[in-house]
Length: 77
Picture 1 (cartoon, rainbow, N blue to C red):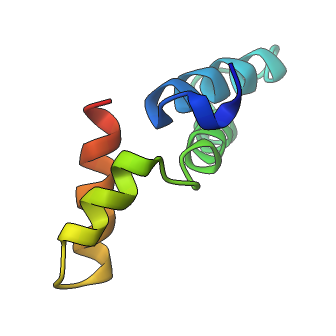
Picture 2 (cartoon, one colour):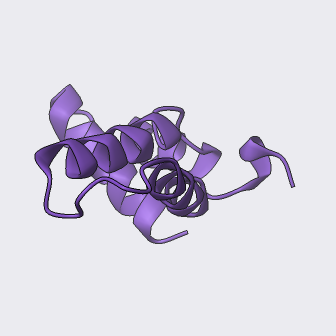
């Protein structure tokens, strides 16, 4: 399955697991650990799915509102 075929939630989960694997030996309570996991997840969901794009198109107010709607759509996939 390619990245495009995976839901954003699946891409985020895989990215978090990969980042965690690469962070072996770093204290789980370290700010570095959390930041690197968050970075990996954000990079994984940076490209929206078709469902997210459609949800964003329906939102006409502000970009921030559209992004929140798109993330909600990703969480529902």
